[in-house]
Length: 178
Image (cartoon, rainbow, N blue to C red):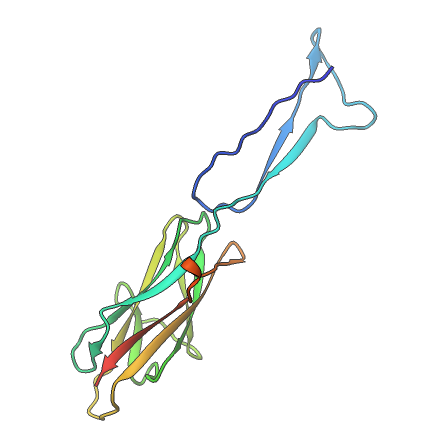
């Protein structure tokens, strides 16, 4: 004789990665526990493929800013939906402005971020969909013309590289007005 049951996954929007369901049976009859036959097992496993891998985008606000104005540009990396894992965005900085000379980078709380070889890592906490950083122009008396700061992101969660939301690019440019 056979008995069966079905496992129905719950649809959600949280990226959790693929998951495993294992069912183990304890079979008794007349108060006697039965053993598996022919070296078999009383356990079975199945997989649930997660279909909620987020996409990502990066945008800049408060651009352009004046070089000598004291303002800053805010760059924000946004996920389309939450991940159960911390998500990292490796940010590469480019454009005509130079990090450390024409501007400095700080976190959303105003604390300095170390930029090494034009890159740094921004972390989006598990269960959160955004993280931001700020670009503060460095005031000087040298006329250089208007300059750009381009941030390009490579975003990963649970070892999965995320695609750009809407098929766009993971790049945003802001301007510093001299």
